[in-house]
Image (cartoon, helix red, strand yellow):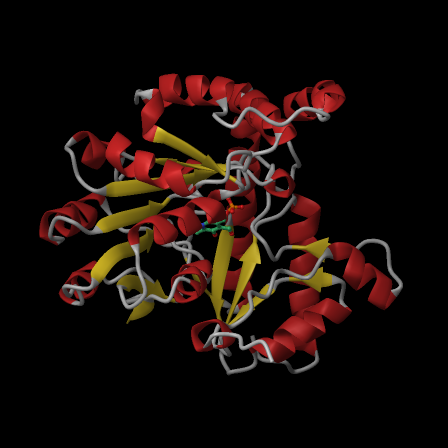
Length: 363
Ligand SMILES: Cc1ncc(COP(=O)(O)O)c(C=O)c1O
């Protein structure tokens, strides 16, 4: 009998946000709203769609394994050499490449909780140990994370902004972490929601790289660029780090259409601006509604909001909202995360919250 190794048996499966079509099938409705996966509600850039349509005739060929044109465009935009970039099938794949490159069984990776659930899964799949540091006041407790460093620490994961809380760690806090972490540990700074941040205290992490620190910055086209379904993200780091990860990367990991769409999306500054505006307006609207309903929330720097429930009833809130045709994300038993949507989607969600409250469900 084939044995599944213990460290694989112990992995908790990733639970994705419920697909809209699935809920519509179940409820027999046509207008469900998904505010569960931090996707861009305005959709992809029309320029990206055009690039995809134009690229369709080429999909008999393998993609460009080096992502030449996208690499050129990003290296110019970011002011880094081309060898400082690595592309992945979503930034998820870059997380996986980092772990597979730098961590061997028994090694440790330090991460916060709650934070992006993929860090512990990938660490465990590689036979590593996840060292979990609870958030403090909804933010990464960087001092405590540094204090957990041992001889076996290989990676520290920091999501900035953090998912699911939407909080950031400031430049000053990150500077102290960078100073305190001993050499030889890779600091992965996951900036999936980078383009949504409005705080003036948000660190420019490229500076750390230019200072020669062992930092890997992660960015993605899945969020503000609206290309989650195509799967494309990238990592920025020094060539020694990128070069090692390149050895582990599959040759054709990023498909042709994703590369072309990402390049076009990058050029569409209007789409980026509109996406930010819709997010800011939605944020203000939802803050106002939550305040008037007495729903406690954590102020966000991203495109989602973390709600602190009055009781341990996140499962009930989630299921009852589903019946209203609204998909959100429960986190643990006392919290839910809601993505900021289009105005009509936000209104729909608030109405659903009101109906739940009207039925005596505490939120
Ligand atoms: C913090 C964080 N990092 C990475 C990702 C993964 O994004 P991608 O679609 O690029 O794999 C997400 C997606 O939800 C995220 O929240």
